[in-house]
Image (cartoon, rainbow, N blue to C red; front, top):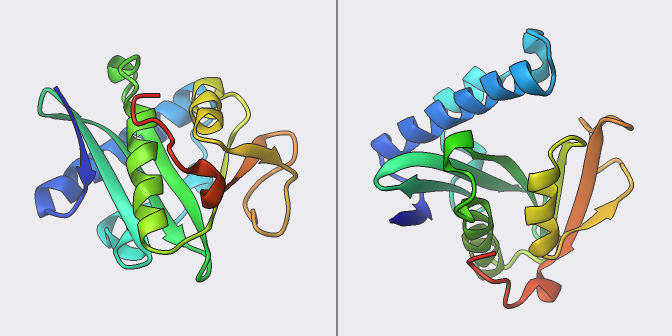
Length: 174
């Protein structure tokens, strides 16, 4: 059984911290192929303060469980009154293939829409093709790197955007 819900309890937040640390290890070993901690500078401060900027009313932190075990997370925070940025999307490698990423994204976008946000941004490493497919199924489209993506690096990151008005009806099982 898969459950997807807002991470709110201390146990939920601890599970998210563990998942994000797992994402960092996975990223550093498999994608960045470096042990340069500067790539995730400030991450431990962010994790210690969760939910921090991902807390309501201008943010959300979503946790997925498979058979009761935490297996995925995703978050958003507000750039301004109409725009959010998606961050920290990760599904454990052993839990992939269950449409968990799509289901987390569906809940996150529904929460953003309900909070009155109209536009969603994200950036992702160019090698994360499965994640890009999940984002495109949700209605995201590629956009050029711009000032709205201050940490994005040309040739390394893919930047995407979504109008929530255009995302009505995104399937939860995509």
